[in-house]
View 1: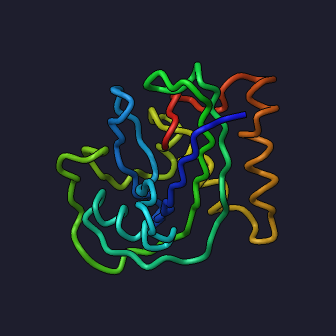
View 2 (view 1 turned 60 degrees about the vertical axis):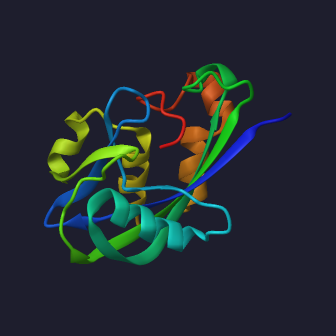
Length: 173
């Protein structure tokens, strides 16, 4: 089976009972997501996460522990821009802490706004599934197996059985 692959790196940044999110506009319908994005050629995941978080939020951060890797398979017919083959998205998720900078919005990028959202308001947001995956991993006991969590939610079998696991139809976030 032929398919496209996209690898992204993201940060879960929680401070004073709020999470830092970026509003992604890539689908044409703005949705909140974790700050982060795709790796550039030759770039490693931590470097990509640091770069993307700064680009999307204005903050510099320090990465903490690796929370997990979410593996998401999107059938060709569910891809946003009419893909001819399925997409396998690997999303590497880190805990992160703000170390400097000021909150700023990305200009001419894939996001248009960054904002601290109180944790108790996240469930009411129009958001991509990555937000829930990241927060679940962030608040999970360290002994939890991230691969098991991810596979239960995003495996091709789960998609075939239950439809897309995402709330948004997003293929890259």
